[in-house]
Length: 225
Image (tube, one colour):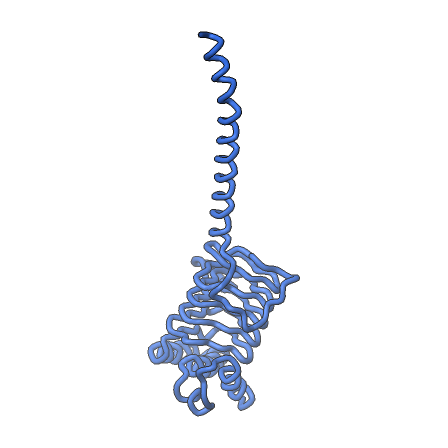
């Protein structure tokens, strides 16, 4: 237990440059408070003290702004940075060394039964405002870009952006844990750029055709005269 608590503090010290010392992390980091509260609530949930577990999770939600269902399974060294608005559903499974930013939802898509929330493998990063919905697996070392909506399974070593989320980087490209998740590829912008280039080429071709037709038109007019 003490090793787990130490890991929860150490991961903040490792990843957040604003964290000056461990005492500050213990008393001032809502993400750490939410995780510790969840570990206790999850222990109660496994022992079938469902009401107490849910009550504790709601108290934690009120105090931290982070809602983690007590049934969710969380691994070691989860880092919830500026976690206001984070929602983690009942059947979520989160591996080790994952990072979740504010406004992230790991939720379901309806009233389906059984496993209905996502599974995050090790070393996954979910950036600000992203929504991962449904029972799917996010492969290890993958990154979900800010504001993305993921509805399908993501293979390992991938970067996903957009609505709906699309894989824009997969394998062959080094993706470190310090990924700049703000400056990600934008597939929609890329498609518009391709269309603009295609329209420019078509205009050039049309202008060239007009130039070729002009001599023949002049010749036809002089013949009629």
